[in-house]
Image 1: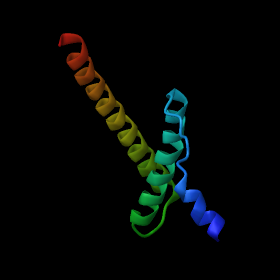
Image 2: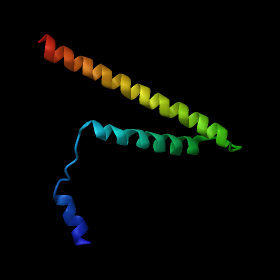
Image 3: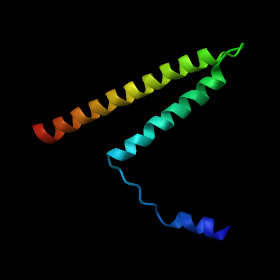
Image 4: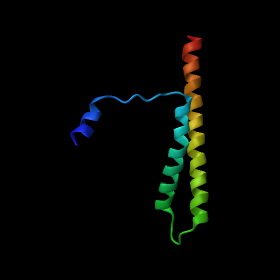
Length: 82
């Protein structure tokens, strides 16, 4: 037990390269399916669960891409124009 607690005292190195964005999509898929599974009305329908989950996944990914593009444009304006 003490070994587990002691492991929290040393930071873990996490790379922040382009490959790390590959972990975002599985996370979004799982979050969307779990969220929609808790919100699906009775009677349960696999078709409705999958359809609404895919819509939510696409919405999250598109919004994240728009936010990333906006932040990149702001960064470009700050660094290049100033």
